[in-house]
Length: 303
Image 1: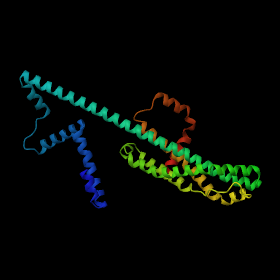
Image 2 (image 1 turned 90 degrees about the vertical axis):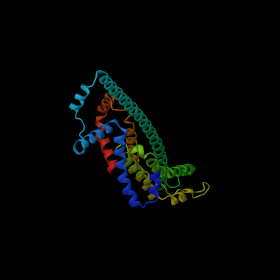
Image 3 (image 1 turned 135 degrees about the horizontal axis):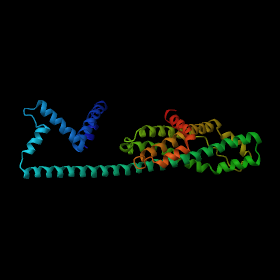
Image 4 (image 1 turned 120 degrees about the horizontal axis):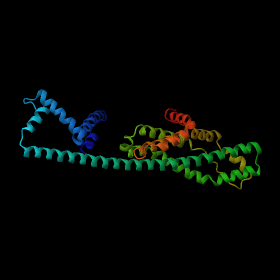
């Protein structure tokens, strides 16, 4: 808390240097003081320092064994019992702590994976609905150009008019989600940062989603159904270039959003669900599709 308050009052350049200095020191301190292996390494460093630079030299292992051998049997028993007790306690404490931390991290990863899946599943569904509506506008215009104000064209236009309000609701929800997607990374940064490339993949998904959200604001016709020249007015109000631009943007980014979001969920669940012989057999059965899948993954991350 004190560190955060301090950073609030420092210039950004100084805060950045301070963070880059303090974080490695904090990680080193946590490793040496909070883990058994760190404490062992730290003790070895102290032993080496005392041996080379100290006024009195510490006992070597042979000297320590000789000193213990010279003790009485009661003292030897006490030393051995103490060592066994301390070692058992350290092993039990380390095992319990590691298991607790692993379980907690696994639960957090499951929560984040489920949130990502629910968010992008809804986003994908709404993108498809918006795209289908915009495509129906273009289809109505093309049908009018081919047939003129035929009954089929009028029916399609009336149906499109009826679906306009649903499209507005879909578009409003997508607009809100295009802002919300950026909060996922900030809200779960501590968990996502432990998974390789998860933050970068989420940024790519957010960028692709934002591009679709920017292109979805196409002009929606608003024509009274009792107008005698309904079809002509409808066609006049449709901007085909805007519509085709939105559809093309969906083509470029839809697979990217779904592929990378699914990959993030898989990476988050790797700690819980590992590869097995059965999964390898399924991979062999689908090996003909593997080059195409890997090509899409590469394109989504680098395209």
